[in-house]
Amino acid sequence: MRQDAPQALLIAYVLIAPLLVCWLARGAQADPVCSDVALVLAVDTSASVSSGEFLLEKRGIAVAFRDPTVLKAIERAGKVMVSAVFWGDDDMPKTQSNWVSLDDQSGADQFARDLEVTPRQVTGDTGLGAGLATALAKIMSPDVCAVRKIINVSGDGEESSAVRGKHRSPLPSQVRDLATMANVEINALSISNDNPELAQYYSRNVITGPDAFVVDVHEYTGFADAIRRKLIREISPRAVSELPPLPEIERLN
Image (tube, rainbow, N blue to C red; front, side, top):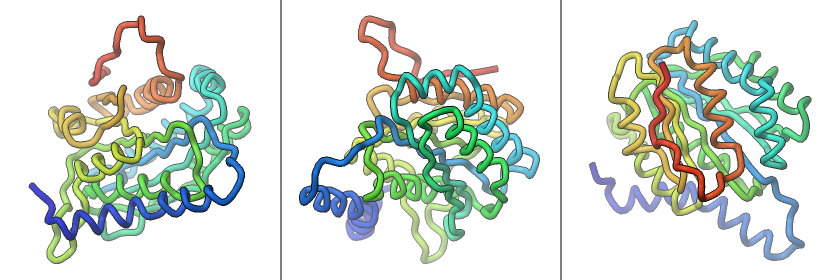
């Protein structure tokens, strides 16, 4: 499906304009102090995610940010800042958390506690493209400066609301292309309980970056371990070139 040129240009303007403003503003001041990594967790809360599964998502992320191996990866990465976007129907405002600097273990624990008390405010169709667009706009905000910018998206379904009546949303592949132009990495966690081919869908339409990857898990009960392993892999500094490459799709039982 090809987006018409005017709509594609509008989407590009909305997403890229904040970055251009940021560049212009920085040209008139001293070099800012940037983080090594800025990470946005984009979490599926559409109608296909039950209340129990939503709790498994939140608790899994919270547990991961208290895990010693994740904390060690954060320490190795340097200065890391993290935020979250909860997405669902493209017509519904997305729930967003504040940015938290993970300078020490207390920062990671603060982020975990913030997520644990975040209420569910988004449901409806699987607006994956709109969710990715929200995450991309957030990480490209003028107040976000980082050497590496990463979107960690998780979900259990394919885009289902790209075209709804007169309302049009960007497709996941269109947001991916904009992220590629802006040097923003996107990695994915697919929960394939209802769609065995979901990991391939994310691989074809969502992920981008030199080492982009998909972690696939069959059930929400495996979400906590999957998000822990995913965070370690994407936050850790680049592996030395002589190590064998990791698989693009990593399947967990």
